[in-house]
Length: 288
Image 1 (cartoon, rainbow, N blue to C red):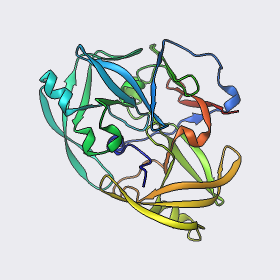
Image 2: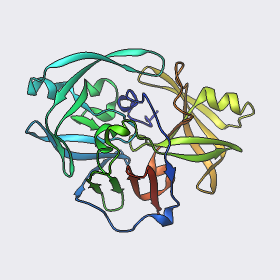
Image 3: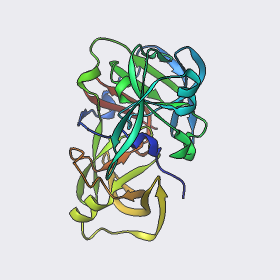
Image 4: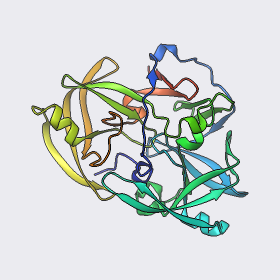
């Protein structure tokens, strides 16, 4: 089964906050701020060139579903970065993690002069992360005012400024409402997610009569069991369709502030999407 999301980024979902969202027509059609080209891998992952502590030629995934920025252990070793122990809260337990402090990270207009980053072997968590050197998460992205991803032009724009959320929004999350067979749910818009992922336990508890078309397929994401199903009656942005979704069990400890799963921009049929950290607003332009 083809994986729907980069699991490594999901390690960092400790705290989530809702934003407002805007109708697609409200998005300014001009690109804002310095713009760089990006590589689109597996038809959904946004990968940009960057550097850490002067070490150039690195590849970073830009992931709005990851609270923390991550660098691969091989890069931390090459830079001889001092590590200190810590932990992250995963779906059902606290997991030990290594952390390092860096003085300079650059990826086009995305820059951080001081940051604490997670250190891990990315390839251990996803086949999709084998050939990347890190993940840029919301801790760095939210220091700016706006992030715009133009999938049509393969261009990323990042507007700097003092009005960004920064430390006031360490887990700045953007969620949109969808309807599944009459049930209203909220999904985090996640550039590290290929399609649609729902928390199985929340869906079943709130919709015992859930209708599934065809056969289900089982698989594994990291160490989590997952089921791929076809759900009729899924409405996103007013359009109802049959959707192929991935179901996993949600966190057993703590609540993600009502978030019921994740939604990749492709599921919005977005050719361009804007994350406004200053106003906590999500805007997008639909494909023709």
